[in-house]
Length: 462
Image (cartoon, one colour):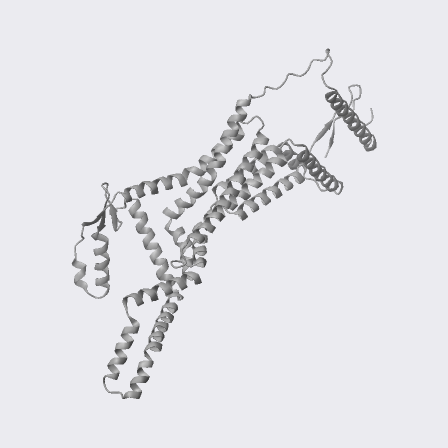
């Protein structure tokens, strides 16, 4: 038998597609008609999990979503309590905040005025001058200068303090103070033998003389007093206080560090288990992502309410409202950024889970996308552009390739820190672009087997 022409092959393929569509329509009509006839043996029903699995999945997802806000706070606390560099990077910019600079300037001037009676000192100086014999007119003139002179001194002192507070020298002092304080705090909480402050098991608070003497020794040597190099190492601790609060604080510190390390993974594991044990995993994935998103939205709302309460409760006589807002924003900035990032991640997972799920709308969207990609491939084939065997291999391995893309995207989100909304968005965008490229370069193979009485060979249509 002669080989069929291209026109005959296309005609046969069209006829087979029409018959296939007719068969699908008949199956749909039978499904809509209700029970099958008695002589038709129904296909064995799939084994469905009991409602208990649905209940377990719901409990796991709810608990995981409820733990998510606690995990955000615990992760923030762990970083702020243990990482000195992060702590300094968070609070060092406050030295450049105009509200903080103005507050420190005011407090410094008030502290000086509390210890030095500037009007009294000014009055004494002028009185001393008049006692030397200045005459009635000069004495009256000098007495009238007491108030303005005192105000001028205060103004001069304020401007001097303000110049220092707004200088780079102040920011350096501020940063060094933060670093030293945090280093000592961490060392004390972890009972580091090198810490200047130690805490005994009985709650005794002591100051180690060794690091202090070593520092003084180095300063003396630097100033040219070489005899100081002969000072021996001092191993002595002076007990300055006895309290049970410090050991409790150390326990809280350890608990916070442990919770910050593991709580986020516990919440994520519970959410994942809830999806795995669910009867309808695709639907469970969407609801798990929605639950996580709602938890993050409530976290952001709670932080917003906390901001209002903090600013309202702050006494204007102690701290201005603008400074209170700045401090609260600095303290909670990392938590808010993490909550926003997790919210964006949850919405992204919900969207991807919905699109990949067995729902009517996403099925139509996937069909529309697949048809568009097929038309592009056909157009490329007609112009002699084909991926050949590589495209065929990629088509046969399409599930594996998409799984690799999903795993890489998940690894980026899980392990790259800090987690930000932009990181999540760009990871999703790049993953979608890779999937689109894979869909376009794949070369599907459709085998058409003619009727048994026809010896037409199998045709490969790309």
